[in-house]
Amino acid sequence: MKYLPATPLKQTPRILRQHLILAGLLTCLLVSLPSTAFAAVTIKIATVSPDGATWMVKMREGAKQIKKRTDGRVKFKFYPGGVMGNDASVLRKIRIGQLHGGAVTGGSMSKIAPDTELYQLPFLFNSQDEVDHVRAKLDPLLIKKLASKGFITFGFAGAGFAYFMSNHPVSSVADLQKQKVWLPIGDKVNHLVFDQANISPIPLPISDVMTSLQTGLIDTVAASPVVAISLQWHTKIKYVMQTPASYIYALLAINKRAFNRIKPSDQTIVKEIMTRVFQEIDTQNRLSDQQAVEAMKQQGIQFINIAENDLAEWKRIAANARSQMIGKGAYTNELVDEINNGLKEYRQRHQATQASR
Image (cartoon, rainbow, N blue to C red; front, side, top):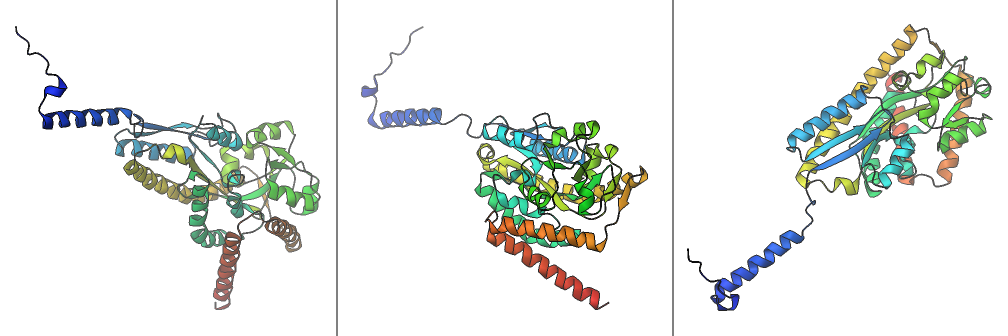
């Protein structure tokens, strides 16, 4: 068999030589591009939410839809039940790249974006309707704020109102002063409230609360009914103060650098599905919270009404604490005004409606 001799490049026709050089340059360019630019991506997410809880069920359903819609290019791997630690540990692991995101409480993001703490200011809201009115305007602003700090979010899911729950009847400030009260680590606002109320709380990560209730290190917590049941705290308390102390919400926050590894068209799919998932969780949590209250009552837990003068004292202390935090510039003035104006607008409208009946 005869082989044709290779033709030196300089002996090839000029136009062919130009094409060969161009093809070589293109090949080098393609080879030099990062091979992982838009390769398949697995997003690692951690949360303290137990596997099997509404949060995890809904997020897994969303992840399954995303995997299907992106032909497997985007997958989620979840670490539920606190196996990666509490919210602070999760956020630390996101910073070092061990995780890409977390389903965490809004307040836990306060070191990254202090304004995320605004919804959880003590004794700020009187009802879910007030929360809904304020959130309609403030949610988009908080989402933008988090994006400016390097986190992609998909909306917020309320976890209900937190109530003081204890082994002893608690309704007044004096009652709470006698209890061993849990305070989430890093909760500056409620620490200030307790300080002004002469209450000495016991700071603990959320992962230590159940053990501490069992051993008697603490005997009082502030939590929403659905959270108390999902984490089994309700088995260690006997009384609930039937006045909302603060509003609790959570979110799925993904590091923007990790999210940007996803192909742009796939990013759109992830945002579409996870936004819908969090709307569903938000709706479901309201129903679950009501069901949790009934379940607690059926188990013999007593809900204690608070007297008007006791409520006035709580609100006075909480208002002073809020004013101090706002006065220190802890929050963005624009967002503080948005909340205050929203509450004023809703309450005036509600009073006018009540007066017309």
